Image (cartoon, rainbow, N blue to C red):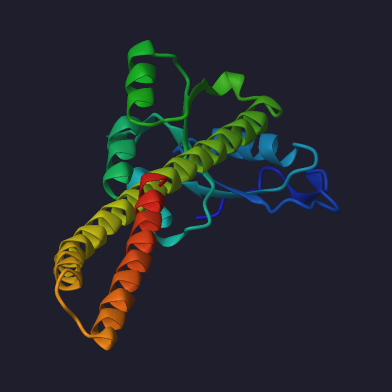
Length: 232
């Protein structure tokens, strides 16, 4: 469901005009209506950036929304949820290949939970009282920037590995081609050399000479191909 705003009328929030950035879509997973409204207020007050806020009160409806709605940029998740804690929900999302960045929100700080959360890919672990009207949105944008940079680095690394594998495949193909040419060329050269030592008519000598010249041309091309392969 969309986050109810009856406790905070529309005119209560400052209007954001001439915003060039696309709105940031936030999924808030929390069964605490009071905090849900407070979080909305904090985000809507942030100057210069617009948020679309979706609110789900339990893990199942959050999973359904994430599977259906691909526009969600980030998840704000209460750790203590009805029927399933935040760690269990994050593991389920990752099993479903949902990689949306996640911020844990909680009323009490538990170092063990924080460490376990980071191990499974949670980006940040915040106390709700720390998530003020400026701190929470800035944390969201910092995380989105970090995730975007991490993705760019990963894409660049994948492209580099792909390029290396492609170059290696080309080098191996060049080696195979050169090998396939060298054996018959050697046999033809030996045959041509043997024929030149025999008494041939002028036309036959000319034909053998043309064959030898062609072989030399082919050999030069093969050497160039080998140099290309060795140079990557």
